[in-house]
Length: 139
Image: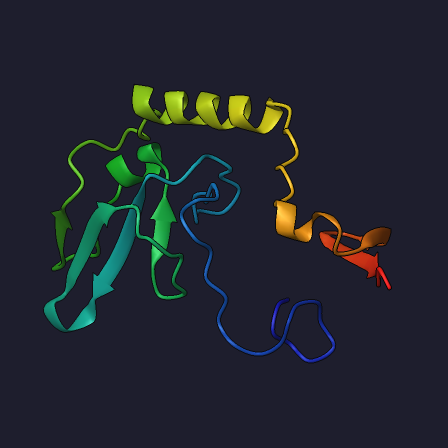
């Protein structure tokens, strides 16, 4: 349990999962990807089913397409559906092209930048740690 003294995790508090990761359906034993978020408005006796929320919240339930479509509310409650199409979005062509460009850029060999003439005789490189260089004093 995260946030429980003696348990794994960084410490107390509520941790939210960004949408960038794949969130799973909140229903027990369902491992499908979530496509909608269910929130209850107790004062209005309303269950609101909308698009997948930006962050996983402890008072909301993420549901897969099957469970979102079969959702029923208690007697006397109203269900408001704000997510008409509950199909997970497919990557667009722009997303795939941007990913391909990023892979090409990362694979491209890098050429060292030319050293300006003013710094050329400033020192001799003696060591390196990561992006830092150790230079010997020319004098």
